[in-house]
Amino acid sequence: MGEPRRAASREPVGRPYLSEVVRMTEGVTRRGWLRPGGPLRTSQGAAIAGIIFGVFLITALVLLRVSVPARPEAAGAWLANSGRRTAVAVALNLIPFAGIAFLWFIGVLRARIGEREDRLFATVFLGSGLLFVGMLFVAAAVAGATIAVAASVHPGADTLALSRNVTGSLLNVYAMRMAAVFTLTTVNIARRTAIVSRWLVLAGLACALILLVGVGISPWVELLFPAWILALSLDVLIAAPPPSEARP
Image (cartoon, rainbow, N blue to C red; front, side, top):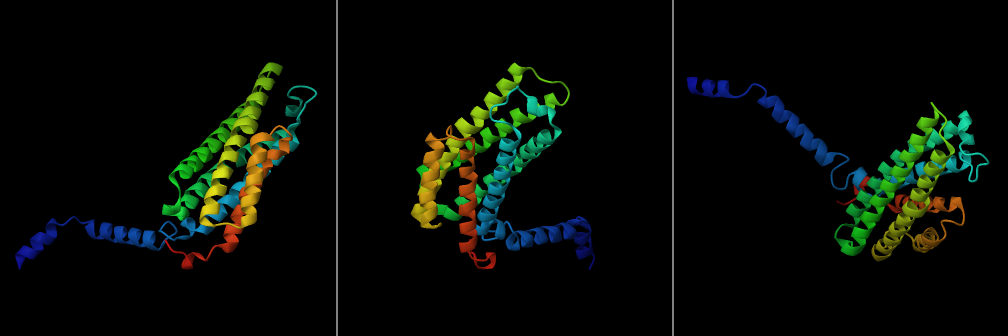
Protein backbone atom coordinates (compact mmCIF):
# COMPACT_ATOMS: atom_id res chain seq x y z
CA MET A 1 0.00 0.00 0.00
CA GLY A 2 2.85 2.39 0.81
CA GLU A 3 4.89 1.70 -2.38
CA PRO A 4 2.45 3.31 -4.85
CA ARG A 5 2.30 6.38 -2.62
CA ARG A 6 6.11 6.67 -2.65
CA ALA A 7 6.14 6.35 -6.44
CA ALA A 8 3.48 9.01 -6.70
CA SER A 9 5.47 11.28 -4.41
CA ARG A 10 8.52 11.03 -6.71
CA GLU A 11 6.53 12.26 -9.75
CA PRO A 12 7.06 15.99 -10.43
CA VAL A 13 4.14 18.08 -9.34
CA GLY A 14 3.87 19.99 -12.65
CA ARG A 15 3.98 16.93 -14.93
CA PRO A 16 0.18 16.45 -15.30
CA TYR A 17 -0.25 20.10 -16.23
CA LEU A 18 2.71 19.95 -18.63
CA SER A 19 1.32 16.85 -20.33
CA GLU A 20 -2.04 18.54 -20.70
CA VAL A 21 -0.43 21.61 -22.30
CA VAL A 22 1.49 19.39 -24.74
CA ARG A 23 -1.71 17.54 -25.69
CA MET A 24 -3.56 20.82 -26.20
CA THR A 25 -0.71 22.20 -28.36
CA GLU A 26 -0.62 19.08 -30.51
CA GLY A 27 -4.38 19.26 -30.93
CA VAL A 28 -4.24 22.89 -32.03
CA THR A 29 -1.44 22.08 -34.48
CA ARG A 30 -3.37 19.15 -35.96
CA ARG A 31 -6.61 21.10 -36.28
CA GLY A 32 -5.20 24.61 -36.66
CA TRP A 33 -4.22 26.93 -39.45
CA LEU A 34 -0.64 25.64 -39.75
CA ARG A 35 -1.52 21.98 -40.22
CA PRO A 36 -1.18 20.48 -43.74
CA GLY A 37 -4.29 21.57 -45.56
CA GLY A 38 -5.02 24.36 -43.05
CA PRO A 39 -6.19 27.75 -44.31
CA LEU A 40 -2.73 29.35 -44.29
CA ARG A 41 -1.19 26.47 -46.25
CA THR A 42 -3.83 26.02 -48.95
CA SER A 43 -4.24 27.80 -52.26
CA GLN A 44 -6.40 30.30 -50.42
CA GLY A 45 -3.46 31.17 -48.18
CA ALA A 46 -1.26 31.88 -51.22
CA ALA A 47 -4.05 33.90 -52.83
CA ILE A 48 -4.63 36.05 -49.74
CA ALA A 49 -0.89 36.70 -49.35
CA GLY A 50 -0.63 37.62 -53.04
CA ILE A 51 -3.60 39.99 -52.78
CA ILE A 52 -2.06 41.73 -49.74
CA PHE A 53 1.26 42.03 -51.57
CA GLY A 54 -0.34 43.41 -54.73
CA VAL A 55 -2.52 45.97 -52.95
CA PHE A 56 0.25 47.16 -50.61
CA LEU A 57 2.96 47.43 -53.27
CA ILE A 58 0.68 49.14 -55.81
CA THR A 59 -0.37 51.64 -53.14
CA ALA A 60 3.25 52.26 -52.11
CA LEU A 61 4.50 52.74 -55.67
CA VAL A 62 1.62 55.06 -56.60
CA LEU A 63 2.23 57.18 -53.50
CA LEU A 64 5.93 57.40 -54.30
CA ARG A 65 5.36 58.34 -57.94
CA VAL A 66 2.73 60.95 -57.09
CA SER A 67 4.67 62.47 -54.18
CA VAL A 68 8.20 62.52 -55.62
CA PRO A 69 8.45 64.38 -58.95
CA ALA A 70 10.22 62.53 -61.73
CA ARG A 71 12.32 65.56 -62.75
CA PRO A 72 12.39 68.07 -59.88
CA GLU A 73 13.30 71.64 -60.71
CA ALA A 74 15.30 71.88 -57.48
CA ALA A 75 16.85 68.85 -55.77
CA GLY A 76 14.85 67.91 -52.68
CA ALA A 77 12.28 70.67 -53.12
CA TRP A 78 9.48 68.20 -52.45
CA LEU A 79 10.88 67.54 -48.96
CA ALA A 80 9.64 70.97 -47.89
CA ASN A 81 6.06 69.80 -48.46
CA SER A 82 4.77 68.03 -45.33
CA GLY A 83 1.98 66.32 -47.27
CA ARG A 84 4.41 64.74 -49.70
CA ARG A 85 6.73 63.67 -46.90
CA THR A 86 3.82 61.98 -45.12
CA ALA A 87 2.73 60.19 -48.28
CA VAL A 88 6.27 58.90 -48.88
CA ALA A 89 6.54 57.78 -45.23
CA VAL A 90 3.27 55.84 -45.57
CA ALA A 91 4.53 54.22 -48.78
CA LEU A 92 7.83 53.19 -47.19
CA ASN A 93 6.01 51.70 -44.19
CA LEU A 94 3.80 49.61 -46.49
CA ILE A 95 6.78 48.03 -48.27
CA PRO A 96 7.91 45.73 -45.39
CA PHE A 97 4.40 44.29 -45.07
CA ALA A 98 4.24 43.82 -48.83
CA GLY A 99 7.55 41.94 -48.67
CA ILE A 100 6.33 39.69 -45.85
CA ALA A 101 3.17 38.86 -47.77
CA PHE A 102 5.25 38.12 -50.89
CA LEU A 103 7.46 35.69 -48.98
CA TRP A 104 4.38 33.93 -47.63
CA PHE A 105 3.00 33.81 -51.19
CA ILE A 106 6.20 32.11 -52.38
CA GLY A 107 6.20 29.58 -49.52
CA VAL A 108 2.57 28.56 -49.85
CA LEU A 109 2.78 28.33 -53.64
CA ARG A 110 5.81 26.04 -53.42
CA ALA A 111 4.05 23.93 -50.79
CA ARG A 112 1.02 23.53 -53.06
CA ILE A 113 3.12 22.56 -56.08
CA GLY A 114 5.00 20.00 -53.99
CA GLU A 115 6.73 17.20 -55.88
CA ARG A 116 5.45 18.43 -59.24
CA GLU A 117 7.88 21.36 -59.31
CA ASP A 118 10.98 21.22 -61.47
CA ARG A 119 14.17 21.71 -59.46
CA LEU A 120 15.69 24.14 -61.93
CA PHE A 121 12.65 26.40 -62.11
CA ALA A 122 12.01 26.02 -58.38
CA THR A 123 15.52 27.29 -57.62
CA VAL A 124 15.21 30.26 -59.98
CA PHE A 125 11.68 30.93 -58.67
CA LEU A 126 12.85 31.07 -55.05
CA GLY A 127 16.12 32.91 -55.74
CA SER A 128 14.57 35.65 -57.89
CA GLY A 129 11.77 36.16 -55.37
CA LEU A 130 14.22 36.55 -52.48
CA LEU A 131 16.45 38.91 -54.48
CA PHE A 132 13.43 41.01 -55.43
CA VAL A 133 12.35 41.40 -51.81
CA GLY A 134 15.91 42.11 -50.66
CA MET A 135 16.50 44.88 -53.21
CA LEU A 136 13.04 46.32 -52.58
CA PHE A 137 13.87 46.57 -48.86
CA VAL A 138 17.28 48.15 -49.53
CA ALA A 139 15.74 50.76 -51.85
CA ALA A 140 13.11 51.59 -49.23
CA ALA A 141 15.78 51.82 -46.53
CA VAL A 142 17.87 54.28 -48.58
CA ALA A 143 14.81 56.45 -49.27
CA GLY A 144 13.73 56.29 -45.64
CA ALA A 145 17.18 57.30 -44.42
CA THR A 146 17.13 60.32 -46.72
CA ILE A 147 13.77 61.46 -45.37
CA ALA A 148 14.91 60.92 -41.79
CA VAL A 149 17.96 63.13 -42.37
CA ALA A 150 15.86 65.77 -44.15
CA ALA A 151 13.61 66.05 -41.08
CA SER A 152 16.46 67.65 -39.09
CA VAL A 153 18.80 69.21 -41.68
CA HIS A 154 18.39 69.83 -45.37
CA PRO A 155 20.75 67.47 -47.25
CA GLY A 156 22.97 68.81 -49.99
CA ALA A 157 22.10 68.47 -53.65
CA ASP A 158 24.80 65.81 -54.16
CA THR A 159 23.47 63.71 -51.29
CA LEU A 160 19.91 63.92 -52.60
CA ALA A 161 21.01 63.06 -56.13
CA LEU A 162 23.00 60.06 -54.89
CA SER A 163 20.08 58.80 -52.79
CA ARG A 164 17.67 59.24 -55.70
CA ASN A 165 19.96 57.44 -58.16
CA VAL A 166 20.66 54.54 -55.78
CA THR A 167 16.97 54.10 -54.98
CA GLY A 168 15.97 54.34 -58.64
CA SER A 169 18.62 51.88 -59.78
CA LEU A 170 17.75 49.32 -57.12
CA LEU A 171 14.03 49.53 -57.80
CA ASN A 172 13.83 50.05 -61.56
CA VAL A 173 16.93 48.29 -62.87
CA TYR A 174 17.58 45.40 -60.52
CA ALA A 175 14.43 44.65 -58.51
CA MET A 176 12.13 44.88 -61.54
CA ARG A 177 14.33 42.57 -63.57
CA MET A 178 14.29 40.05 -60.75
CA ALA A 179 10.51 40.47 -60.78
CA ALA A 180 10.57 39.67 -64.50
CA VAL A 181 12.57 36.48 -63.87
CA PHE A 182 10.18 35.54 -61.06
CA THR A 183 7.21 36.10 -63.38
CA LEU A 184 8.75 33.93 -66.11
CA THR A 185 9.41 31.03 -63.76
CA THR A 186 5.97 31.36 -62.17
CA VAL A 187 4.38 31.32 -65.62
CA ASN A 188 6.34 28.19 -66.53
CA ILE A 189 5.36 26.44 -63.30
CA ALA A 190 1.73 27.52 -63.71
CA ARG A 191 1.67 26.26 -67.30
CA ARG A 192 3.05 22.85 -66.28
CA THR A 193 0.75 22.40 -63.31
CA ALA A 194 -2.33 24.18 -64.78
CA ILE A 195 -3.01 26.02 -61.50
CA VAL A 196 -4.12 29.30 -63.16
CA SER A 197 -6.12 30.40 -66.19
CA ARG A 198 -4.46 30.47 -69.60
CA TRP A 199 -4.93 34.23 -70.03
CA LEU A 200 -2.84 34.82 -66.91
CA VAL A 201 -0.02 32.77 -68.43
CA LEU A 202 -0.06 34.95 -71.55
CA ALA A 203 -0.36 38.13 -69.48
CA GLY A 204 2.58 36.99 -67.34
CA LEU A 205 4.78 36.48 -70.41
CA ALA A 206 3.94 39.98 -71.66
CA CYS A 207 4.54 41.44 -68.18
CA ALA A 208 7.94 39.74 -67.86
CA LEU A 209 9.03 40.89 -71.32
CA ILE A 210 8.08 44.50 -70.59
CA LEU A 211 9.83 44.44 -67.21
CA LEU A 212 13.00 43.03 -68.78
CA VAL A 213 13.39 45.51 -71.63
CA GLY A 214 10.92 48.33 -71.06
CA VAL A 215 11.47 49.57 -67.52
CA GLY A 216 12.91 52.87 -68.74
CA ILE A 217 9.92 53.63 -70.96
CA SER A 218 7.75 54.86 -68.11
CA PRO A 219 8.06 54.89 -64.31
CA TRP A 220 4.58 53.36 -64.13
CA VAL A 221 5.74 50.15 -65.82
CA GLU A 222 6.82 48.79 -62.43
CA LEU A 223 3.13 48.53 -61.46
CA LEU A 224 2.75 45.62 -63.89
CA PHE A 225 4.37 43.11 -61.54
CA PRO A 226 2.20 43.64 -58.43
CA ALA A 227 -0.86 43.99 -60.71
CA TRP A 228 -0.13 40.60 -62.27
CA ILE A 229 0.44 38.97 -58.88
CA LEU A 230 -2.86 40.50 -57.73
CA ALA A 231 -4.72 39.13 -60.78
CA LEU A 232 -3.12 35.69 -60.34
CA SER A 233 -4.03 35.62 -56.65
CA LEU A 234 -7.65 36.58 -57.34
CA ASP A 235 -7.85 33.81 -59.95
CA VAL A 236 -6.43 31.26 -57.50
CA LEU A 237 -8.76 32.47 -54.73
CA ILE A 238 -11.85 32.14 -56.93
CA ALA A 239 -10.87 28.67 -58.14
CA ALA A 240 -9.61 27.37 -54.76
CA PRO A 241 -11.77 24.92 -52.77
CA PRO A 242 -12.78 25.81 -49.20
CA PRO A 243 -10.10 25.02 -46.58
CA SER A 244 -12.26 22.22 -45.16
CA GLU A 245 -12.15 20.46 -48.52
CA ALA A 246 -8.46 21.06 -49.21
CA ARG A 247 -6.09 18.15 -49.12
CA PRO A 248 -2.64 18.28 -47.53
